[in-house]
Amino acid sequence: MTASPLRRRWHRLQHWRQQLTVPQFTALTGAGVIAVGTLLMATPLCSRESVDLWDALFTVTSAITVTGLTIIDVGQELTPLGQLLLLALIISGGLGLMAITTFLQGFVQGHSGLRTRLDKGRALDEFGVGGIGPTFNRILITGSCVMALGTVVLYSFGFSDISQPLERFWAALFHAVSAYNNAGFGLWSDSLMRYRDNPVVNGVVAILVVMGGIGWRVINDVWSNRQRLIRLSRLSLHTRLALRTTLVLIIVGTLGLLFTESFASGGVMEPLNWAQKWQVALFQSISSRTAGFNSVSFSTAAFSDAGLLLLIVLMFIGASPGGTGGGIKTTTFATLMGATRSTLQGRQEVVIHQRQIPATVVLRAIGVTIASLIFVLLMALLLGLGPTSSGAANGGTLSFLEKLFTCMSAFGTVGLDLGVTAQLNRWGQLVLMVGMFVGRLGILLLLSALYGSRPQPRVGYPREELYI
Image (cartoon, rainbow, N blue to C red):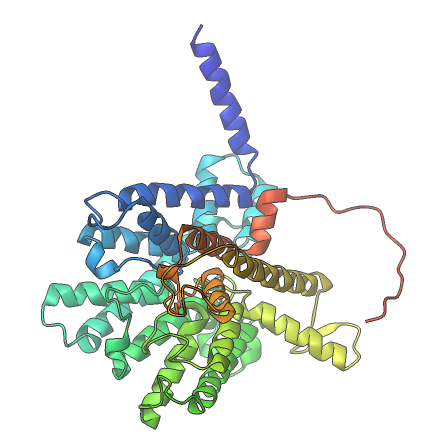
C-alpha cells in the first residue's frame, strides 16, 4: 500500500523533470551545483574556521560564475583541498554552464528527438544537430591543451621566483586555469600586483584571457582555416566580428587608460615609466573586460573617475558568445554599432561586411543590451536601499560610482573590486550574488527559464509610423 503513493510521487517527479526546458534545467542545475559546492566548501577539509557558510556560499557562487569577487583570502583561508574544489568549480563554470548542463540533460531526460536536439543546439549557441557530446569533448580538449601550455610557460619562465617546485606548479596551474576561464581568482591577496613588471606573467595571462574570452567557435573556425588565413573572408562573419571587436576594444581600452590616467595626479600610474604604463594599461584593458586580474591597486583614489567609467563600459561589453566571460558580448556590441551606422546612412537594413543581418538578430541585440543595462541599474539601486556597508572609508557610505562599478563587475562576471565587496553587509553581497548568477546565465536564458518558450503569434498587426 505504501509503495503506490511513493511510485506516484516518483512518476510525478519524472514527469516534471522531463517537462523542464533547457533554460530551466540550466538554472536549476547551476543552483544545485552552488548548493552542493557551498556545503563542501564550508567543511573543515576545505576551509579554515574563519570561513562560515555565508563566506562559502559567496565564494562558490563567484567561482561557478567565473567572476572572481571574493570576501576571503583564497590562498590563506582555503586548504589545498578547498583550493582544488575551487579550481574544479571554475572549470565547470568556465567551460560553459549552459554546455555542461545541456550535456547532462541528454542523460537525464533521454529519448530526445530532433526538436529537442535543435533546442539544445540553440541553448549552446547553435552547436548543431549532430549532438552535444562530441562538441563538448572538443571544447574540453581544446581548453585542456591551452591551459596545459599556459601552465608549462608560467612554471618554466613566469613564476621563477617561487623556489619550491610543487608550490610553483600549483601556482602556475591555478592561475592558468583561472585565466583561461576568465575567473580572476588568484592565490595571493594582491592578485598579480607582485608580477606587475614581469612580461611573461602579464603576457601569458593576457593571452589565456583572450583565448578563453573569444570562445571555442572562433578558435575552431580559425584552426579549420589556418592554411587560408591570408583571405579573412574564408572565416565566418561571427569569427571576423568577434576578433575585430576584441582587437578594437583592447586598443581603445589601452589608449583610453593611458589618456585618462595621464591627467590623474597621484594616481596608480603616476610613478611608473612609459614602458610600465603601457604594460599596465594593456593588461588591464584585456583583464577588465572579462577576467578581473589586476596588476596595480584598484580604488577610487588610484584611478580617475574617467578611467573607472571606461572600465565600466569595457566590463559591460565583455567577452564573445560561447566564451568563458560575461557581458552583453562583443558581437552584440558590433551589431548595435552596425545598426547605428546603417541608420545614420539611411539604410533600411543592417549590413556588416557586405552581409545583411536579420532583423531578429538586431532586435535580440537591442533587447539584451537594454535588459542588461536595466538590471545593472536595478542592482545599484538595491545597494542603495538602507545601510549596505559599515566600514567604507567615507563615513560608512559608498559613492554611486563605487556601487555601479561593483555591480557591473558582478554582472559582467569580471571580478574587479574597488575594495567594496568585503565592506558590504549580507544584503549587499546577496545582490552581487544574484547579479553574478544572472550575468553568467544571461538575460535571455533567465527570461526563458522564467516564462518558458511561447509560440509565435499568428495574428499580424497594422503598421503605423512613430516619430523618433
